[in-house]
Length: 264
Image 1: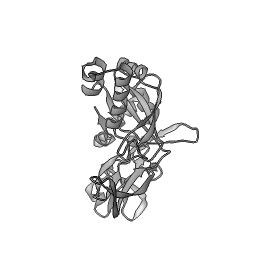
Image 2 (image 1 turned 90 degrees about the vertical axis):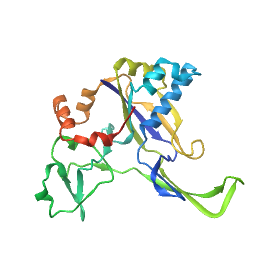
Image 3 (image 1 turned 45 degrees about the vertical axis):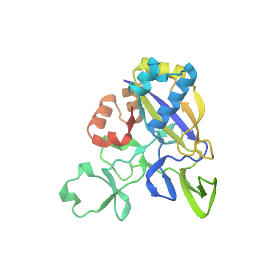
Image 4 (image 1 turned 180 degrees about the horizontal axis):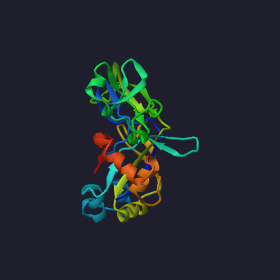
């Protein structure tokens, strides 16, 4: 199995609708879904190959309908002091902080009921660098990052009359511009290489709700110019050896894989 990494830079506010909110407010997720990336790439292939019946094209069918490519969500990414990308993932549910002390962190996977009986914890609604997956969490090892959001106010519209409803305000929560998100695509090396050759290295696109208005503009670009072995990529971002990486992912990580999110 090989992978290629992609990067998304938000050029305008992005609204990825979440299930929260109410009739006068739209709230946003804090990541770019893999399904949105699938749509970006599928549209590029349709345009590049001039497809009228896309589902009949072998590459299109295999990559986007048959699940030969696995497209991850894109999570917040920053730069370190050496200007290298630092990708984050959702903080696993097992990693929690003490209810009245945000500086004390526990890994519940390593604690039994006896140790927990006098401790109240709560989950950490944030993203973290996954270097703690390979050993017990220490208070100095959880590097977290929150996604910057903004709240925009609009007049609710009467769709039949095409005018604003007097005195009714509609709120859009959005991911703020000028943030970077990174994800990856898993597949066979030959398939990934062909995908790279058929798509643009860097391309402005639109994702999310209210596209083509004041929301949704992003810059999509490839991080890798050729597929990389997934073991080497994992080694690069965490474990001190490929074997340690595998052990960490399959052992201590456990069901956290489901939180990372793979879209087929």
